[in-house]
Length: 164
Image (tube, rainbow, N blue to C red; front, side):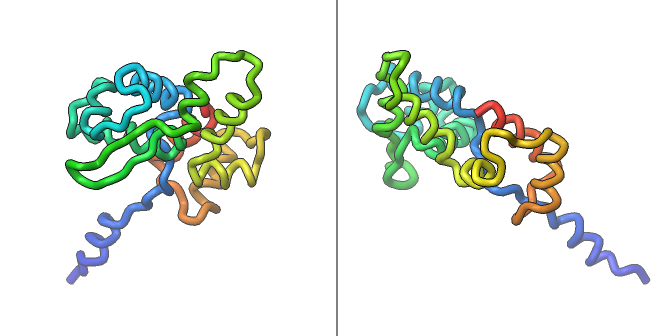
């Protein structure tokens, strides 16, 4: 008799990648600008915010977009459920409103945002601005990283990280 329990358990087990932003920083800044154009410095319900970005209010993609902006430190949130509100952070306002092309403060705000996600901080500490090839990054992230990345998600993350 074959024990199918172990086979079923193996199929259910999957590697869950570490948390990383749903989009790169450039896209997140565009979403922050869309938010600012509609709400300015005001807080609004998260369902309203995701509609500003073109998503349905219960869209998982819209919630992932909000999570990415929060991860980059461009949005802050408070409350839960139907009372959850989001608002642009001072760092986001610096990025959006500082129009001086030589502004060190704006450049610093962008760097802060880029390194706000924990996984970005860890990789920057490991490699700095001279990261290895995509293949080497993939090997490190799927074989050496703790917790390891899922094989199916690692390429998306590498692209997001490099684009940021």
